[in-house]
Image 1 (cartoon, rainbow, N blue to C red):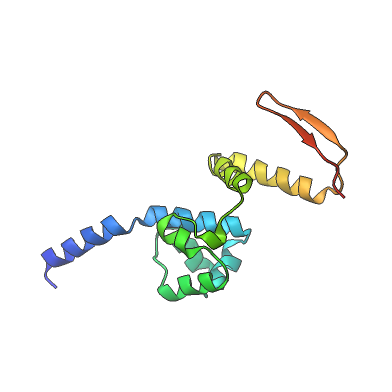
Image 2 (image 1 turned 90 degrees about the vertical axis):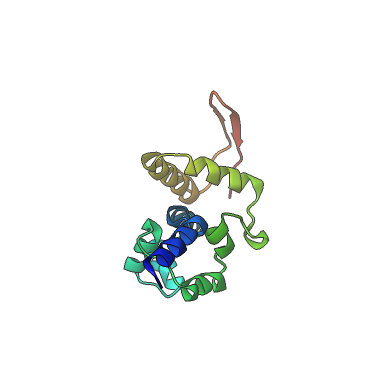
Length: 143
């Protein structure tokens, strides 16, 4: 392959493949599953180091890796294209929550995760009404 042909192939690949977008969607899908990098990578047969490199765009995963993710109900269509597959479609409220979450900076994401974990593990909540400038929320007692 001549240097000119190689350059043309690379330009074509760059147009089709945006590694930064791929890496961001891979991280987003891993976050959706609730898995850490080590456990998510293991679904596709990758090490923690490889998973980290995929999520930073330093390396491109193999088809075998993606097939392993797909076999474990990971939305590979979303990772590749940005479009959710029907089988991985989220309820509207969950999708809205994820959109809000990914609109936060990293510090606020950490705070949001801590808040959700605290509410989830705190046990039954008393019936409470919360007022904020944007909304009024009636929390129902859970058991």
